[in-house]
Amino acid sequence: MYLSQEKSILPSRLLACLIAFAIFLLFSSSLSLIQFDPNSFIPISVFHLILDNNTSLSPTPNAKTNLLALATPSAKAPTSLIDESTTKRCDKGNALLKVYMYDLPPEFHFGLLGWKGVNASQTWPNLREAKRLPSYPGGLNLQHSVEYWLTLDLLASNVGNVARQCSAYRVQNASDADVIFVPFFSSLSYNRGSKQRRGRQNDMMLQGKLVEFLQGREEWKVSGGRDHLVVAHHPNSMMFARKKLGTSMFVLSDFGRYDVKIANIDKDVIAPYKHMVRSVPPVSSASFVQRPTLVYFQGAIYRKDGGVIRRELYYLLKDERDVHFAFGSVGRNGVSNAGKGMASSKFCLNIAGDTPSSNRLFDAIASHCVPVIISDEIELPFEDVLDYSEFCVFVPAADAVKKGYLLNLLRGIKEKEWTKMWGKLKEKSLHYEYQYPSQPNDAVDMIWKTVARKKMPTRLKDHRRNRYSRSRSQ
Image (cartoon, rainbow, N blue to C red; front, side):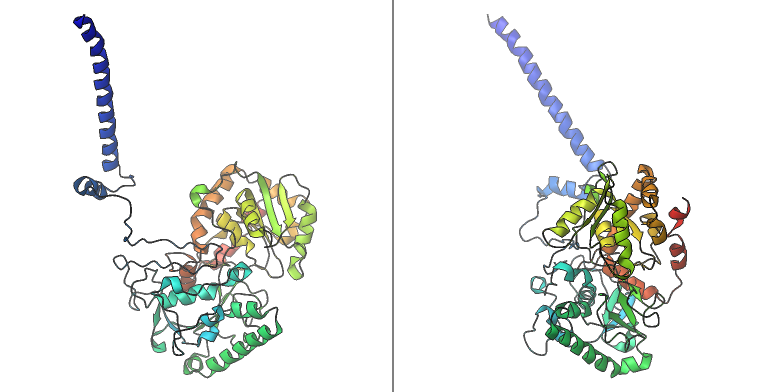
């Protein structure tokens, strides 16, 4: 009887031993892969730390954490990257661009956001208190917030524990500077006053005071204003002052409402709009087959001036089976719906409106929807170093309104070619993100680098010639 029990027990014990041995082998091989795989997400040094000290990978409540503040359509104050152990040294000796910034009173900049210093002598917010930084108002105001991000970045260059890119550094003496920055939030000043008579008067008053201030400065007199940098990103901002300050370098969205003698590509900088839709993470971006809509456009259809083409395209495309061409606005979740529509479309139309450019191009880039640019007079940010033909389709307006031309062109771009453009689009999308503190090759960093390059030979003409290469081959 005991023998029979032993025979029945032995196999079960043997099976248990085999299972335990197999688990041991699996665990050992997993540890080996973690330790020696060069692509492992856990570095070998951390692996040894875990074994030797029983260290947890979970952050402790007191741990300093760096969070990348990617630009999203939010009116919240920016989050600071503060970590003294990782901050790179940034001073006028290793900065690409040395910038002197006038200490204009708060009424020209953060005062427009409702910020007030603790006393009348405080000109700038304390950047060491990141949670208390004044936030920029949301909605459509945000798309022209360029001056806010540039000013914050310059202020941060003098704060030792803010980890940021070191393209621009704020110097204390104008004689040390390559550029003199004028911190006037001109787009916000215009937006705040555009619908109210009193507000318009305040905007005009600030412009007048700014002109008087600058023309009275010795720095302006020495250079005639040519080394001054003025941000006027909203097409209607600085309407009064632009002629009087036309010798300076402007940061603009386009040249649509400027005389060529006042603003032109030779001296001025084109900066991207801050996109309104949320950025799509590259790993979550839908592929060719996952985007059922061929062409997407949502926005104002009936526009004046160069925007007449929108109406013509609407009647050509509105009934096509794989095209979304509809009126849209920011109200009633309009921005959110547009973001979803772009993220599920292969191509997104960027058509000239009242001005050659619009925020729609940068919404498309943030959504990784290949932009189709139908705007003959458009100027593009950073085109001296970026070849837009790699990730955008350019179509002359005269060809776009020919029946069948646009859809035949886009349907002729098959999955392989589209995927190549989509890959480039994801790769370049960081260049259009505004964030604080600035990071390598984001929008703030790219603007400063463009300012620095204005005195250098560029590949701008070559890249502009490439715009219509795809259309000409048809």
